[in-house]
Length: 460
Ligand SMILES: NC(=O)c1ccc[n+]([C@@H]2O[C@H](COP(=O)([O-])OP(=O)(O)OC[C@H]3O[C@@H](n4cnc5c(N)ncnc54)[C@H](O)[C@@H]3O)[C@@H](O)[C@H]2O)c1
Image (cartoon, rainbow, N blue to C red; front, side, top):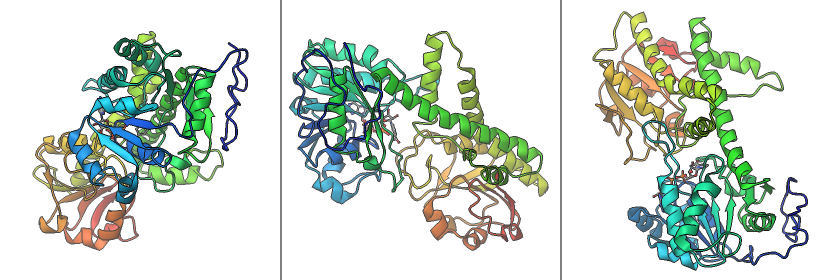
């Protein structure tokens, strides 16, 4: 099989889909990418924007196993904050819990979670269940595209056999396979689905060509055809692992510079004045991407007899950051000749990321558990956090208004939600805390010049 231009970047402009041409072979019969009907499996942070986008050209199907979520979406309610009620209600989409509806679609896109289990091992259960559902229900000629983040080889070696087994059909003859990693950045209002270049890869150049045409319906800044499905899978894992490693470096330097009596964010600001310095900041690395995907790579390394030492080290540095913050708070108490025992600690922030309601795998839970185990009484305030997802926080009081809880002995600000900036200025925070209360401010939000008049203040 000969191909042309396979590695070239392809800023799709709506022209003919012939940049990736198979020579001496007739194209298999693929749907028309401009009008193909799309079903999305998994209606979360990734799936919802996709279904809203694709429904602009053809009626779409949104399938999820979570009946409550499907009912809410039918009523225009989205808890991820990624699409508006207007977008949701005006989308030409059928939201369903019936997998048989997948049989109506020309294209099926899989956006189910790929988390890790309690031992930080990949959990493919949702992905494999979705593959079986597809196999049992898809129509002949369908194109199946995986978007969930996986380690290289998963789509072809684990998902495809299940689809073929359940359907009795063969890929490349009866249906087609593709992969396109999702790069959305939740809570980012400037870089949305349409504004982020997307990697696409099919099981053959024709399928890649089809993916370019299909995704150009929703992505307006160009597509990047990868050399293969495995390359596309690996690229996504690389992006997130690179980020994890860089943040781990900042977290490790935060601990060293702290011992030296300098602030790592001051150091980063100075170093950033060089043109080729990469700007990262220390913090709690949580969520279901950066703090998870490197474990998929570590697991892949294990299967290939490699220990992936650098990736493992970065993970352990980032996993240790919640403990460092608690120990730092204890140190601040000691400076005031106090101990953390029985102290009332206000923790501002619970989600894993600024201005994003997602609390999954948020390391703030781990930090609050540790505070509690050190004898503190913990009060957590996060007005934008999902209110039905808790991964720890033993003994923590999840409060609705810090101003109704009496005086606190210390504050930890884990991240800088806009709502904190707007509604919790320094004076407000001082009014609910005792004089000289220790404050750890991970985003430097309260470093306004006179913060030390009231607080025993620390920022990285
Ligand atoms: N959220 C992000 O920022 C982001 C960015 C890039 C990539 N990703 C990747 O995209 C994938 C999806 O992430 P997400 O954040 O959208 O997850 P999510 O948890 O927000 O949504 C996933 C949805 O899939 C549903 N689901 C689970 N199993 C199912 C099944 N067998 N059949 C049908 N539906 C099922 C769940 O009910 C849920 O509604 C993951 O692999 C993630 O790593 C996420």
